[in-house]
Image: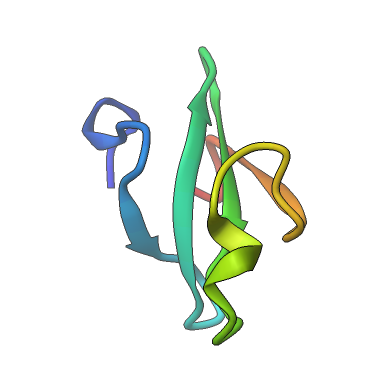
Length: 60
């Protein structure tokens, strides 16, 4: 995907085969949380229980 294709709330598949939800879009990075739990309370709204991860331009 290109950086311009991301938007807040977008769910996408990352390397390693896990789903992520885009939470923030920086100039050259994307901040997302892993969607790897069955309990939806982990993903309700900020602050998230799930760990947020940074994807840089090489990982995108």
